[in-house]
Amino acid sequence: MSRGIEICGIGAVTGYGWGREILWDGLVSGKPAAVLTGGFGRNRDESVWIATVPEGGDPADGRGRFARAMRASAREAIEDAKGRGWTPGRRVGLLHAVVIGEAYLWKDFYVTDKGKLRLRDYLALMPSTPMSTFMQEYGFHGPAMNVSAMCASGNAGLLTAKAWLDAGIVDDVVLVATDLSLTPENVLHFTRLGVAVANREPLDGCRPFQEGSRGFVMGEASVGMVLSNRSDRPYAVTLGGAMSHDAYHVTSIDPAFPEVRRCFVEALDNARVPAEEVRYVNAHGPGTKQCDKVEAAILEELFRPDTGIYSVKPLAGHCQGAASAVEVAVAALGYERGVIPAPPCVAEAHPQLLHGEFGVDGGLTVKSSLGMGGHNSVVVLGPARA
Image (cartoon, rainbow, N blue to C red; front, side, top):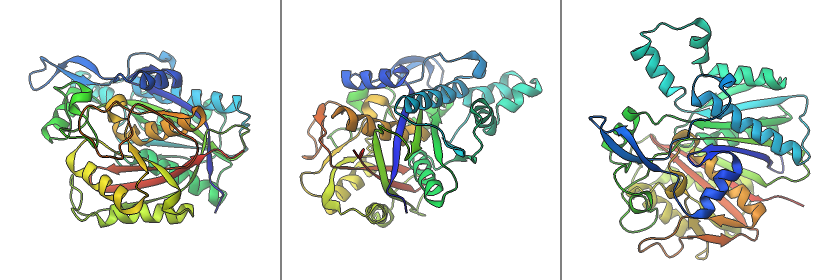
């Protein structure tokens, strides 16, 4: 096994806007990315709180925001990594963590266009097309593959990248996680499931590990990362991790959470670190009762009583297939900048909940992500080595 996989470059497109620094500045402000957006609800005449990616990007990258955001975040990550001393190896692989691709364009294809498109535009809808054109743009010749594990997709992509590097399949990996799927239909069904909150201000409706939380505010994002061990100034290192599956229910967690617990334990074993060295739990933390209950119980069971827990979902929104990638990027940036911009606390909270800006002076971070349907994932992050 390798000594870990370093995060050498970061790019981001989120509800705050296009760019890594825009994401960081939005989080530091303590103001949620979600805004009241019209055209939703059962009668399409309601305004709801969602954190959608605004229009932008290069039109040459595609007709939809999805392809434009995917390529913009990946390019930003590559340029960032090059500025930190990274030179691409002979075999650069591409992993794209994605659950729903061009949601708006597929809807138009069936409803508006009645299945009639130019062949080129039809091929652009395929999940392999933005990956293929991106590989062509940079002349990368490693493997290119999609990874899909619901909300745990970003973590799954990170662990897949580490496995590729450990096995010597690639020299470097560009990981991108993209989810721009907030059509009115998707938002409506998540609110019907009782897990998404669309009719309350974000900090009021989504309060992970606080009293009165009603669920999460939905968001969109694309996050790119360059993963390599050949950079002069990496942000952070992924030491290891684990994945498991509940095999229990389509939406609910096994109340005894044996597979979630096992995932945490095996992640620490895989990273070869004791639980006592973990200082922070960057939680899935969607603000739903069952997820928050399980992660709080794991926190108290496995880690030291001074280990802090936090979730940035009240600020960035729950970005679905890109959620854990957004949250890994925040942890990595926080190591370099010495601070994590967590959401403000608005109600009675778990005693170990971190809120507002808090200093990061080393120590390990456990990043958990629990995907709907039973997908469990945990990665162990640490500060970059000198």
